[in-house]
Length: 296
Image (cartoon, rainbow, N blue to C red; front, side, top):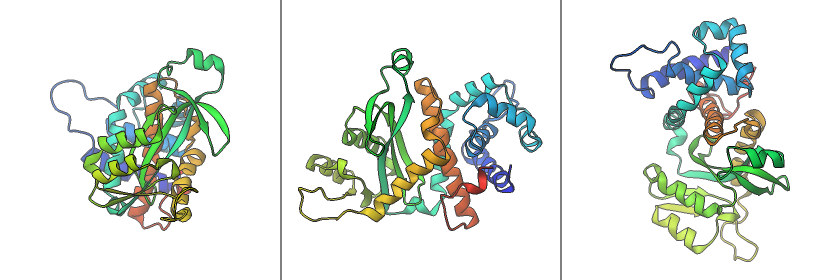
């Protein structure tokens, strides 16, 4: 484990313990592994590339630096249960980290949807606990069909997640994004600019975003007069954010088998990216979304 990751986990623990995890009150035995430590473990697992929880628990027990930081490491089953129970804290930590960064006050947000595959065979589709939640969808960037969910992400220009959700890929993109924005309307500032792709076109959707105080920008379609052009430079940012999630943080190999399991693992990866961006802001690193210093 690098000194950079050690420093990140220490700073993250202090922030989470002070501002995210509520103070423990009342009677009862205090857990040996606190929620603040659990969140730091969840980030370290993704940063170091351990998709399998059993291998991750073995690695922690075999690494003196990690066992020194987390002396009361749980078993695999205990870690798995605690992590799923703590998914509201994972989401709260993401928004807390976002609010601590200068990019929180950016006037421009970017949004896109990316596939989250959950099965590769027909037998998996028939027997999976995700039946009724996941569905078949088409990934245009890879020109292939997949079975799973779709991640809708609204983030700042540096990639810091602001709001996100998982949805059935057969539900219309505009419908899902409208529901996501409405559910998080308290985060939207007046005259906020939202850059989206061509799929978020249409007068009804534009009127809806305007009623929320959002100025929607998207690339022009071929059958439209010139308005915004291709927005290629700006659109490239969200593509690079998705590539960070898929390439460095293994979004497509999350290993979730239940709705709560998939949600927790996606939240883990968004939290790891948010923690890296936050730490890079705090340390003055130029490339805010660079995670190379933490992944070995």
